[in-house]
Image (cartoon, rainbow, N blue to C red; front, side, top):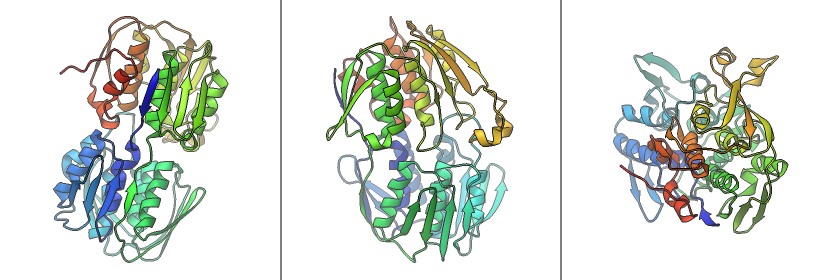
Length: 425
């Protein structure tokens, strides 16, 4: 039992810092979490010549002037997947960008062809040189672009590039994640003219942006992680600052499995009251069941009664962690569902649909045992950490740098909730 407070959203914070660079005056970003992606972003902007400085607890000043180079350092592509976000900002500020191919978590193929095609609709020329992408535009001009498949980062990159472009830009089939709306909110405070009409975003370019003060939205993925930790360990916790409107698809599934929760002005309370029931999920872009919640849900289903099916449609290699759970005694069998139209069913390219397994059958409840676990990506890291709390005996979790990319002091917060956990070098 206990309470935990979620910080600023990892998937919004570092992107808002980049967006603030589009202004002509200083901006202040509040409620940032101390996570790896934020650190890499600040380091990258400083390498470009921009001044980003701390101005209090979890807050930074962003000075928009001083760009010395339009070429990103190599580590910016290796450490996170924000290359095209930096590109959108640099194109708007300097008319050119040289970026390394993007990195981040190893979740399968994450092509940026959609991002580049979006840039081309604004008049950007694209050239590949070795492992670098050269982007140039004498003058960005508004255009119409429709994403063939929804792209969270692609939508954000398009917004950054077009907000100061000449004329109107219309983005069709735009991603609907709340983190994108958080970016739109910041830019509109700075003087942008952006409005959303469901899956369409309309941008009227402005000549310049001012600065603004903006508070990063709470991290919904962190909230779901602690909720799963509480339910899987038969606990009872309050998650301060959690917003039900941003995790509605998750809450709807909790009702089906018999989990208990209550929303209030302080956040959301989650608690275990009776045996959980197996329930199927299929990941989807917002407002659907988020792909980042899928590993956590799969773990929770190992503690539910019956067989559940988990289908991943957003990333083509996001079930790697299941071998680690099976090592602990879980009963998870991977398979590929029979799909009539893979091109429509999957958010990744259908040509990739047969290269990996995209679904899992999970039998439960299962008693997990301690094991030596290796983390492959960010959400798998949180999942395996929680699995170790459920398991009997002492487990070791390796490669925790993946966890630190998106969680601030995960081990310390779990310890405050009663977990027996220790970080070692």
